Image 1 (cartoon, rainbow, N blue to C red):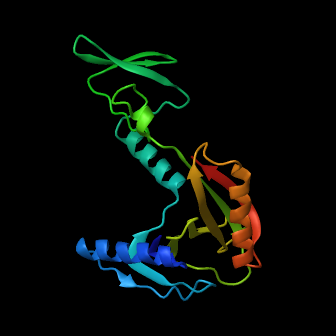
Image 2: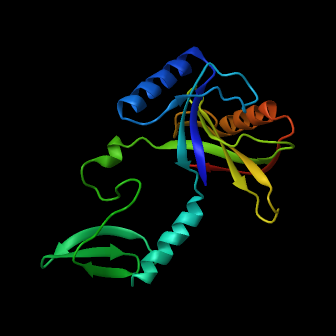
Length: 211
């Protein structure tokens, strides 16, 4: 879906970040504009918008990519753990739970490199964030909103499966560095309270987390 992406702030510190983003975007030649965020049910101090951005369902994208791989003769194996990559006679050898795979080249396309090279395991800081889907009586914001305040919050929409034309409000954010908080549940509760306070008719449909 093509939507407008909006970064907004309700605090002085967040507004400063929005102004920095606006300046950086203009320096890069992006056609950003000031945003009044009129469809949000609360006042904002600053906002910047960029039209023509993409709101995507990652599962739809993943399925399309998998289909494209198979159409080009590729094979996909799930549930097989790669334990390492080595060399033998100028070829790559991939060590997996199901045996060894030989290849001319190997691409590691993981979020974090799993090979013990470069010390990435010591330099990567894992982050955890939360999201929830709600039904809301009446209209919901249609642009893609990302808060510059702390904690950050994001707003999206998604079609509700099995309910013709109905949209869900997705609320996300309230993240933190993994292992650095006393209670993950407290962050979830803060997010749910924010959503229910901001959208009084919001009714929880599903919630999840990402790390």
